[in-house]
Amino acid sequence: MSEILHAWAVAPAAVGACCLAADRARVRPPEVAASVLMLLAMLDAAVFGLIAPVYWTALLIVAAVGLAVWRRPRQRRAPRVPALMTVHTTLGMVVMAGLQVAMGGHSPTHTHGVALGPLMVGAAVGYAVFSSVAMRRMPARLDRAQIGAMAASVVLMAVAAV
Image 1: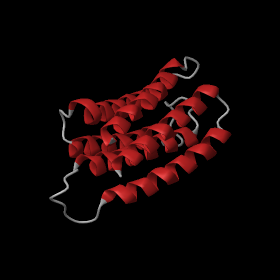
Image 2: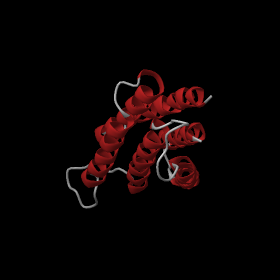
Image 3: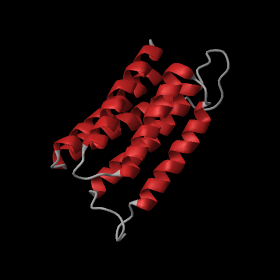
């Protein structure tokens, strides 16, 4: 059942990436790259399993930090991107990274330490609440669609992680 939910979580992630790419008025290559990276990580984890989840987690965390640095305030070369959108995307990458780890180590007979599933469900619920607030504050329809799609994807992955 969790594999099916994980596969279904890829669909909203793809919609979110398409919403970012379709916004020709404000081309945002770093955000599109982040969205595609999350989509690839989810697709690999759900279908292929070529790269270990811990490596996807490390890559997502590094990309989140890189995006935050790239879109820091007072940067002259950066186009006008709402700070709320940058915060939402970077937090989404961090939550996705945690979900990759939580979903990657499913073994009923061999477990160590704290179970990440319930912790990541809490993080996903918090992210969904933050997303609903962010959706109300974003004026552009494509931005709202991207935020909603990312939140739906995170929630579906969190349900699959439990």
